[in-house]
Image (cartoon, rainbow, N blue to C red):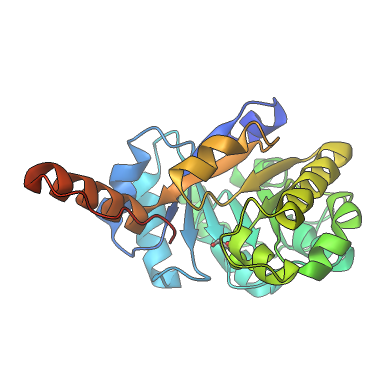
Length: 259
Ligand code: 3PY
Ligand code: MG
């Protein structure tokens, strides 16, 4: 198997993905054919269940778009299930300590580097018979920094052996900092972003951002992020529908990004 997004992050190339909240394989199929580097199927907050993943990941297989899954939490069983469904990487929310990060990195790798249990049924079907031999080097283990405690420990978390990337959840990070959700210009927020980016850079791993809007996504590269989501499937629909309705009616509507 080959993780094209991980290869980009390792070579310092910026990548842009999209977030999938809807359990419809046609949405995923379309997005994967629109040149996004990766799609993240969201089991934490999206309207998806594990059985949807089994259909959605094959819907983008064979394209150059990397399938990532945001799991519900750091439980090793859930991480193993997402990878066994064919994900090329997991994004784990609310990570707060280096011990947690180490357990996540281990859950993503087969022994001797980790503790992932062997069962590459879907991996072999989708990615070929070299799956078992190549998965440890290709699976991305990504942890979210989005709480006050996670930020406090970010340097130690970033230094964790086997971790591929940090990922910022901007709205939970606002909650963690005690500022208004969406107040992304607040110095407390911009300071936290600079600290997270520096921690990743110093540890030699990538750092990504959930793009709350196309505008915040566009600013991510200059802020030092290696990868960013341009939006969610639902937000794309809302933004496109608002623009279409405004053009057709001649009455401007309020475009709402976000989730
Ligand atoms: C956040 O903004 O906290 C996220 O996790 C994005 O989904
Ligand atoms: Mg979050």
